[in-house]
Length: 72
Image (cartoon, rainbow, N blue to C red; front, side, top):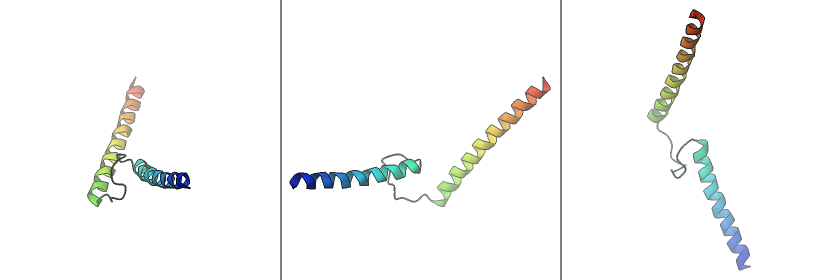
């Protein structure tokens, strides 16, 4: 009976820890950060801006490469 209780408590604790780590992985945050904190609007705007800038830079790079190839 004691072993079953230990196994059951261990499974519950492991599940809770695994869910918290899974939430952090899904949100692309550090593993040991608080999974229940909400990003502020400013942080989300900064992240979206940097992603947009990075994608724009890649598109500009591809366009420049295509123009150089066409000029040759």
